[in-house]
Amino acid sequence: MIQGKTSNLPILRRPVRLGFIGCGMVSRVGHGPAVKGDRRAVVAACADPDDQNRESFAKPHPVCVSYRDHREMLEKEDLDAVVIATPPWLHAEHVEDAAKRGLAILCEKPLAGTIEDCDRILAARDRHGVLLQVGHSKRFEVGFQRIKEWLVSGKLPPPHQMSVYWHYYIPDFTQNPAKWFLDKSKQWLGRDLLKEWGAWRILDPRSGGGDFFDHGPHYLDLARFLLGEIESISAETNNLVQSRLFEDQAAATLRLSTGCLVVLEKSNQVIGRPTGFEIGYLYAEGVKVKFECEQEYQLKPMRVWRYGLANIPLDLWTPAVSPWGKRQSLYFRQMRHFLDRLTGQETLTRKFEGPWAATAEDARAAVVWTKAAYRSSELGIKVKRGELGL
Ligand SMILES: NC(=O)c1ccc[n+]([C@@H]2O[C@H](COP(=O)([O-])OP(=O)(O)OC[C@H]3O[C@@H](n4cnc5c(N)ncnc54)[C@H](O)[C@@H]3O)[C@@H](O)[C@H]2O)c1
Image 1: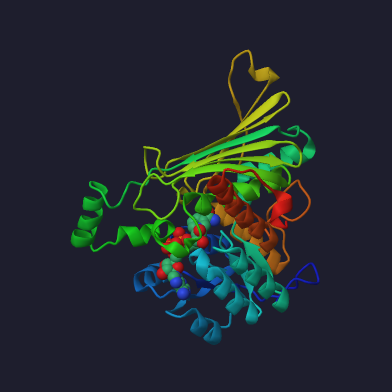
Image 2: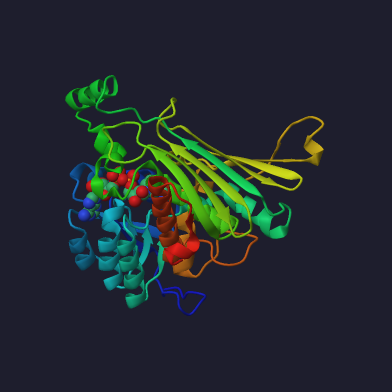
């Protein structure tokens, strides 16, 4: 048994016994390998009604007992914590069930599909007094940590703009050649690529929104984490592929309390590889910063470059030196921080104070602002913080 440093942290034995609720893509490629890579925890059990996803997730984890029903897992297994990686409309139910048993929780973003469900999550956390960390994984990117440290130390003056361009290419699955490819994968290889990719994102009315709902919360949260409170949002969206339920193109402009403007572009209709590109800039007095994130499942840290007065003669960006390798990627570092909090250790070094992970309040704010972006687009208005009860 080891004792947490702070009195309100749980006392946990070693290794921490984790249960997984939801064994799809992010569990298999992100969180599962992150637990394995940490060594302070084991995947003791997992639950997922999908046999194929559950079995392929459980395979690399030698002591993992698997269940179709998460409640049965929670009843039978002696767990310390759970990772909830189900689609957003299930998060509230899964958080409530885990919190009731006093388990610490790492719950994926978006916190929930509706504000009502976000509130259920906050209430469950408070009622049972459990640790709840939300998977706003970008906070743990080595590059964003570096930017945060530059901001805190003053090496990067307060920016007057952040611009992010995050684009994929997800073809219309109802049209050839994508339709042909999907049909043949099923027929010849027995693979349901739509399920494997998580097509609930664009086809399920419960998902809470479209492409901007899936990814916008990452940068809405990051803007607050790095730069300051959001004061207003204006957005425009389009639904370019008519067979999809929600938008697949969005452009949002935010004003922060510092006066900084944030410009977010997100689409899955920009031609190129499905993995797309994710680049951004921060502009401040006398310096600009460029960043480029790898597609998250590559498990590679993002890259950051600076450009200041000294760069002007040769017009070259200066790369920021950051540790490299799978263990420095966002899911590994996020899990490490979660395990640090459970065990009272501090294995990730940082040069900034205060909370690192997104709280349920932060994650709720990201959902509220994403919904506000939809309202802005629908009504052709700017939505201000005062109207949102934040
Ligand atoms: N932080 C990030 O960088 C990041 C990246 C990818 C996904 N996500 C989030 O993670 C969550 C899951 O996404 P995904 O891509 O893994 O989706 P996915 O569709 O691949 O996996 C979801 C899994 O949940 C399972 N499931 C459905 N109902 C269940 C139930 N009642 N009990 C247990 N399992 C159930 C499904 O069968 C599926 O295996 C989403 O909220 C998504 O937005 C976050």
